[in-house]
Length: 169
Image 1: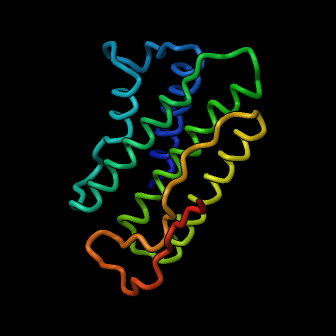
Image 2: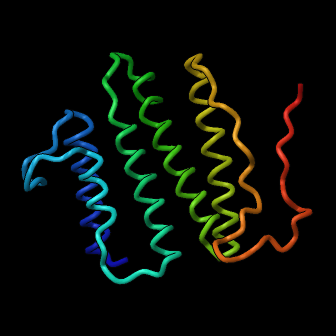
Image 3: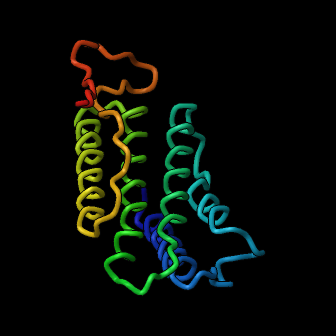
């Protein structure tokens, strides 16, 4: 991705984060006509710069969904408590990272990045739990381990290494 494109996306995301989420209104300079925050984010994130394969298109679509949910989820009504507001914004931020890492596990082929994605999922889940515990909030429901998700178009080469989530009674 070019530096110009990164800067452009960064500017739009910052505008959304500061303009739309914090004060609840999109700056008029960013809108040709009124639209929802979800539509605005989707339009930015799904802009086509070149043709994509079916696998890449599916991967990109999942990431647009994850980023849209994340940005909307971060748009909180301030509670008057900085700590509560911090957790309220960070949980969807971390969940967005989890969903993006899961998409990498579904579609990516680079084993280093797949392993890193597994680590991202685990660390972000742990941080969500730590933040909620710090505030005495209920914990999220347990989810299956992300290990050994086969990339799109490939099967797991050694199914005996699959992680199994076992709940204690």
